Image (cartoon, rainbow, N blue to C red; front, side, top):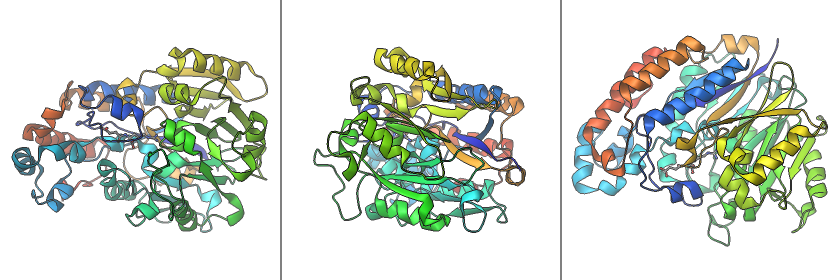
Length: 453
Ligand code: SUG
């Protein structure tokens, strides 16, 4: 049985907007209240999926969440029916509109943490929906994520979908954006590297005031829930300087694929690294994570790419993927090619015969990037064997026909401009529900949204 990595990309939702909701995420703060183009954003995402499909990868899709979010509006006293609730919100609390209308579920790397069946005690694929408690707009994603994942990974002979961890900062969990899996090959048993920002008993913010979203205790809970052997788990602290520079998730400063760890010199903090870790020491540290994997560390030094350049270009938020011929490709955001230092780093890495990275492809994902979401943020990686792929429910593994249908669906339903004021338009709420209702038929998912039940 061949296990292959499936990248499930989050489809951008019809209310994609720039709410400026994410403190510590430079792009989100910098683009607050700008005009967004949901239609273009969705097409940019679909173009990336199409290209990976064409490269011979298995590509999946996850539907957007319904926004504005009826259950949250209801819990806040506006009533559950989104159109009427937005009318009330408009006249009494317009400032809440971005929180309940954010399309942030598009960043599927934050949807869940996943363990393939080779790594779990019961031989099933385990998925834990992330609670994303650090940000209000994201804290309302967990339940829908669990519902959507249950609709897709419904076959409980093969899959176990766990509820989000208790919704408290002590168990702040941001999903796969702070988790990597090391293995010589996707199909072999792997080592799970959980990266956290703080222990639950430490302050939420760094000394410079930036949020440390993921706790060690949350990561440990996910490892326990998934039934991974203790010697196949590593817990590593993200460096405070990376968080302060805008790396609000580990996937802004590191990316792992099979044996390869591509990271910034200043990504991690550990006693053995000291306060001034050399590139060699970081390489050694990373290589020590797994006794079962011949780790290939590729450490990009701060003299080559500064943390600011890494965060602004999202170099490390590239997807690192294995092509069917075994070579690896960096799926980079255009910004990483347009920035001199990161471009040079990519040239160096691809020219170096000592690692499997053969080429770089870049994508214009600017609509998502302006909210701090690059190629890697947009996808959830799930390693599945043939039987598990066959056991998926719904029409979620894409082919050209489905991508064409999704493209046409976007053109039929999405606006090409959304400003903060538009979020107070009840017509947008109605449009959004109609679009998603139709989408559940296209994807054969049944009723998954609160407005459908
Ligand atoms: O959680 N931005 C998201 C971006 C998530 C990117 N994901 C990964 N790095 N894996 C966040 O900060 C901004 C929403 C707004 O401002 O409208 C937002 O939620």
